[in-house]
Length: 121
Image: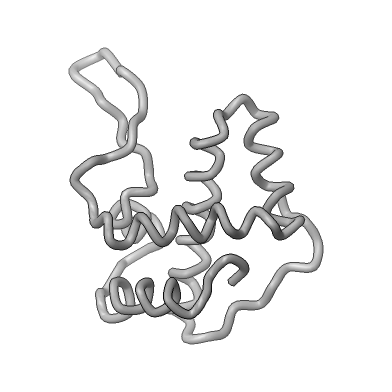
């Protein structure tokens, strides 16, 4: 994947490789990429990043998403999120979430990553 070097790949594989995740959403929650909604009764107070997560996994996902912004396809995804009104940091977390989903599918199917040729935003 763009933005993932040898050290980052080793870190991701040691953290995720042997753990059974039912879906990509479970992996997103485990990594702390998925937003948590704070609710109490009928009041919803917004979404925030969970703090009780595996930071050893969240940090390399976030940094690899930042490094992947050099790729034009992933930069287009980031620009699209910013056009939707997301802040830069939130758009970067959304990109990390998308990359976490790709990581899940690559590990589940036991295949290699194939780079997209056209933007799919």
